[in-house]
Length: 179
Image (tube, rainbow, N blue to C red):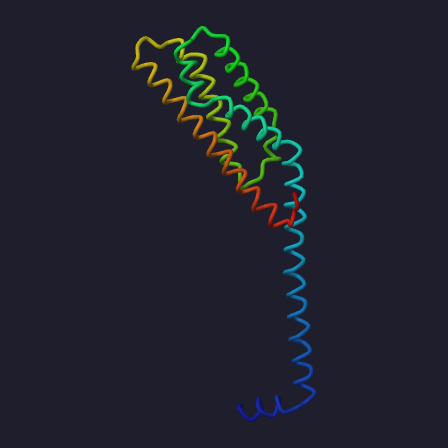
C-alpha cells in the first residue's frame, strides 16, 4: 500500500491534477466566503438604511426629551404638581410613546432590539409615574420615592440610548460608512 501511494505521488500527472483540484477548491471556497460576507453587508446595509429612516428620528427625540429631564427639573415637577411644566412633560412623554409605537419593529436592528423594547417599557413607566404617582403623593416619603423612580427610569433611558448609539457605530464601521 505504501509503495502504491509513493508511486502515485511520484507521477507528475497525478500531482498536477491533485494540486490543480486543491487550488481550485481553495479558490472556490475563498470566493464563497467572500460572497457570503458581502451578502451579509448588503443585507445589513439595507437594514441600517431602514433604521436611519424610521428609528433614528426616535433617537433624536429621545435625546431631546432626556435633555429636558434633569434632576433639577424632576425636583420641580415633583414639588409643583399643578404646574404647566408638568402637563408639558406629560404631553412630551405621550408624544414620545406615540413615536415609539409608530415604529415598525421590522426596522429595528436585531442588535439593538432589547434596548428598543427597554425604551418602550420605560417610557410607559415614566408616563404612569407622571400621570398617576405624582398626583397620589401624600408626604415627603412619597415625593422621594417618585423622584427616585423618575431618576432611575431616566438613567435607564439614557443607558439604552447610549447602548444603541455604540452598537450603531460598530455597524457603521463594519459597513465602512463615513459620517
